[in-house]
Length: 416
Image 1: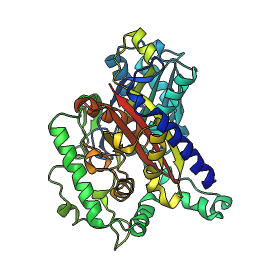
Image 2 (image 1 turned 90 degrees about the horizontal axis):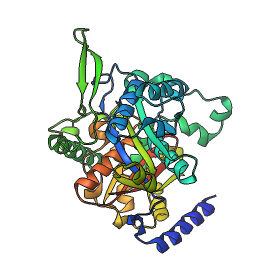
Image 3 (image 1 turned 180 degrees about the vertical axis):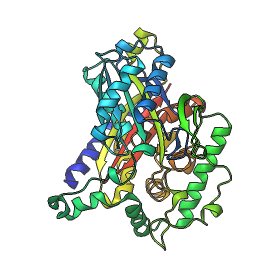
């Protein structure tokens, strides 16, 4: 199996060598993005969306896509929504959310769950459906209310059959514990993790103060109960509320480890539990031009690979080279990498092993600074990436993340 995978990668590399940098050329059949946006991300159990159901967040994102893009709702043939925690995968309420948002009854909706890459998988599934001719216009989205649905109830009990298989049993080891072990095995020091985490906060603070998230965030009006008084209020949530100023490596160094007395992982150098939604509108370039849709970027290629369950965090290291090879480009041709900061430990290791310059990684900060609503992150990264590429007059970007149970996913994008 390993030999077959290596053969696939070699095939991709050969194909890439032929393509060169042609991904920046414009073709009628390009799968393009005409709108990519998200809600703010808010702190789980504390923030502005703590009392808002996931489907309500999704409804807000859907309405914003219709309004900002000007797309006629009836032209959207299919919607895929990535989410990890809802009962039944969220299939029922997400269909209802689309109807409330204004999509007609003949717009199809489905949910999917590939753990932390669910949002990206949803976007890629829609892109592939368009590429194959199954649909012309679709939306890939992601949503999560970790405030309302995260906890022990989200963990599946294994049967004796699964428990008796050592590698299968590793699939349910808590991510914090396996990331702690990975940090020790791969010799990622706490100092390196805290420095990376502090940088994420500092970049996010600078970006937020400079208004760099404003273009990608759609404000939502929601009901919120004041935990101190019990009073229910109507509030408008328009900014990430997990971003904290004044965070340094030194201040993070004072936080107690979360998973082991002598450990290195803690609340300050791991992704925040949070709530949010994101959505991406896709179609062919020829369709966008016919409909008068403004093109903001295009989807080029994606990869998904498996790794050992206990090494879940190395997923981007394995997935990114495959996606780059499929796109026919080298790592140096990429201007921005959005790599999900599930834990500083895994992100530091992947960046170091891939030999990527830190100034290309998450230039506006990442999940450590503003949160990781599990199924939403992959779709959120598309809006963050394309907005920043446009602002900085750059072209090529990659989104990637590690995936629970031992996987990695990555995708290549071009801004216009």
